[in-house]
Image (cartoon, rainbow, N blue to C red; front, side, top):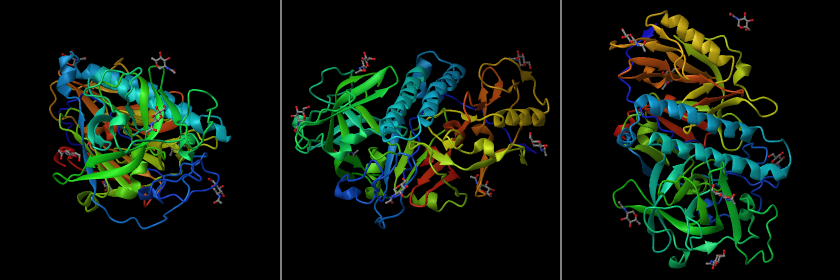
Amino acid sequence: MMRSAVRALLLFLFLLGASPFVGAAGGKLNASSPLYGIEFPPFNTGAVADAGCDGKLVAQEVEEVRRSPSLKLHMSSRSAAEAAAVGRTRKESFLDSAEKDAARIDTMIRMVARPSGGRAATAAPRRALSERLVATIESGVAVGSGEYLVDVYVGTPPRRFQMIMDTGSDLNWLQCAPCLDCFEQRGPVFDPAASLSYRNVTCGDPRCSLVSSLTAVRACRRPRGDPCPYYYWYGDQSNTTGDLALEAFTVNLTAEGASRRVDDVVFGCGHWNRGLFHGAAGLLGLGRGPLSFASQLRAVYGHAFSYCLVDHGSSVGSKIVFGDDDVLLGHPQLNYTAFAPAAADTFYYLNLKAVLVGGEMLNISTSVFDVAKDGSGGTIIDSGTTLSYFAEPAYQLIRQAFVDRMNKAYPLIAGFPLLDPCYNVSGVDRVEVPEFSLLFADGAMWDLPAENYFIRFDPEGIMCLAVRGMPRSSMSIIGNFQQQNFHVLYDLQNNRLGFAPRRCAEI
Ligand SMILES: *[C@@H]1O[C@H](CO)[C@@H](O)[C@H](O)[C@H]1NC(C)=O
Ligand SMILES: *[C@@H]1O[C@H](CO)[C@@H](O)[C@H](O)[C@H]1NC(C)=O
Ligand SMILES: *[C@@H]1O[C@H](CO)[C@@H](O)[C@H](O)[C@H]1NC(C)=O
Ligand SMILES: *[C@@H]1O[C@H](CO)[C@@H](O)[C@H](O)[C@H]1NC(C)=O
Ligand SMILES: *[C@@H]1O[C@H](CO)[C@@H](O)[C@H](O)[C@H]1NC(C)=O
Ligand SMILES: *[C@@H]1O[C@H](CO)[C@@H](O)[C@H](O)[C@H]1NC(C)=O
Ligand SMILES: CC(=O)N[C@H]1CO[C@H](CO)[C@@H](O)[C@@H]1O
């Protein structure tokens, strides 16, 4: 069966820094977890994501989280026009994004493939995790779009800072005065001395053990007095180091003029910061770990978090919503699938069971999508990776199924970079392609619209399958191209992912 036309696709792919948000649902701290003994600010009690060393989600609900106003943030991204301004065609931009995925994926694999066992390993994934971010940011440079900036008000009195939102890393940080080595940013850097609510986290504070320092062994002479130095790096290009600190973060709510202040948010006050951050003031981490903004705010906004990504060509901002979105929850086509146990604490694993092309289930052994005993493999959803990647032999079977079903309806183009198959659809208005769906172990089905898995380059008149094989790994990734115009919900309370088709530009 064929599906209706692929509409003209405007594509300026961006790697958006919006990934996972899930965390373990309200955490019961456990002596063998790295968070044991940490006192979180009162707002956070019982709502700390616990990513144990083994990455297992520990614990279930601790308390009924009171229903609070949802927080809807507008993510502004560099406009497609900017990419055009630097003279890039859609095709170039897209292919760049696909190339940049590789760096991100490499880091992901390293992160999962870390040596098993040993508490000492806990810092490593965070470093690796932060490396992923660079991929996001670099891609932003290359594509002229990619990073999502959000306005956050920090300190007392509150001052506005534009921070890059990154759902793939945890640490929040700002460039801080005195700036010993800072990159150029729009507006003044954060000055701790000008804020009444700034406090250093001390080196004896258990939260200090959640970050790395520059030296292998952190000197901590006065556990209650000396500040906690942190060092966080992103590949070989970027890094930030300074004092781990606490500050009041204020974010504006959806309702006009309303804002919400959260005290004692852990963040890095960076005195030395190097890298490609495009004039932003710092980074807002929205990953699953305990230090992320999403985790720290969990008890304030509840255990749900969602984003809705506009078409990859749109200049309209995408949305991230903390808390419940009633329209989404009432959506008749909202489907849920349970998160799978996490093999690596950053990612949102899903139990993908099968792939359907043209309504027919492909003959792919389910073990291809499962997490192996050594923690490798598995299927994750990531909004920071552009395309979707399938472990072999799944990708070859998917590719072949499309080739077979398209049945030479359009001339195949051989040798197109990175993507396969590609067709010459020049002059064809309504292109027909087979349906594509993902089936999860619990029976949930994700039916994708054609524009989420075929990309059309015009004026070249070329259309390609926007799915690739996973290089050197058995992991599969559902990337952001496949998530366009879906409202994707990370429901930690019920340990499940929700997805519903939605015109994201209209939210
Ligand atoms: C703590 O969690 C680990 C796994 O993360 C588990 O093996 C252990 O039994 C738990 N201990 C308690 C006291 O709950
Ligand atoms: C925080 O620690 C730094 C040392 O890195 C120190 O200069 C500063 O005065 C401390 N700030 C406060 C508020 O204690
Ligand atoms: C931070 O990054 C800069 C620029 O890439 C590099 O020169 C510097 O050595 C890095 N700092 C550390 C401590 O790794
Ligand atoms: C499915 O694939 C397996 C292994 O490649 C093969 O043995 C089996 O015959 C295939 N089943 C069908 C129905 O094609
Ligand atoms: C696609 O087909 C048209 C003719 O229909 C031809 O002019 C064009 O060169 C082809 N493009 C490619 C990339 O093969
Ligand atoms: C939800 O599942 C139903 C039935 O499995 C399916 O028909 C529908 O298309 C799915 N919705 C989405 C958004 O994929
Ligand atoms: C647009 C808007 O409402 N901005 C407000 C966000 O919150 C800060 C701090 O409370 C206010 O100063 C802004 O005016």
